[in-house]
Image 1 (cartoon, rainbow, N blue to C red):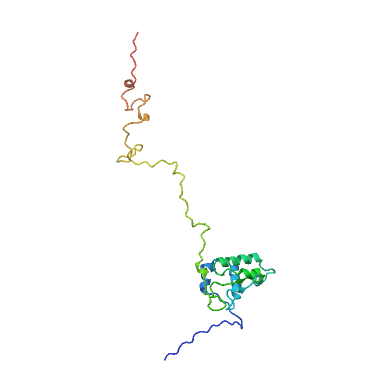
Image 2: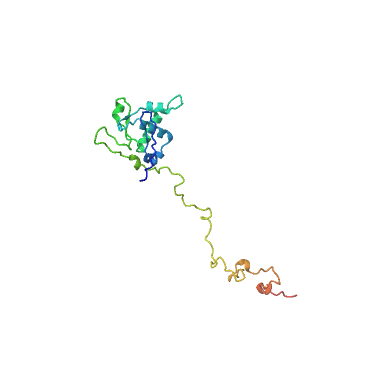
Length: 216
């Protein structure tokens, strides 16, 4: 009988503390990927306060979040920036609406992570997963919008193209030259000032007869 290959047992060294884990389904979702790094950090601080039993009543204040996120800075992020990040988390469906009673009683707001089961006693409420229904908004128009039809400058002014059979364009002959027009224009008529060998007219006298002059 073949021996079963032992599986690797990779366990985190929590040093007796709790472990915060973000499911890959959440980390790969469009709602999470649309967040900026600061908003993801705020979500991580709310997730850190989850102890396995308090989802729906995760209490954390803006001051506590700011102290955790200030890092090596002398001052922590202001409350307006933290509040804007939480609004984005609620809009993306990752965090549920906080209970207003805790704020009215001057206590820290209590939050619910939508991808974790909630409830203090059975029957527990299943995860609502609102983040899965979030889609990127299409309000901002960039280069994706259809461009209007291009209008060339010469189109409104250019006449229509003339074909070979058009009255204004005589058809070419076999050797490539244009044939003569049946009705010549005034410029094609013979001029009286042109003498032979011009063969357009036989003589100028035929077209401009003069009365005979009587000799004295």
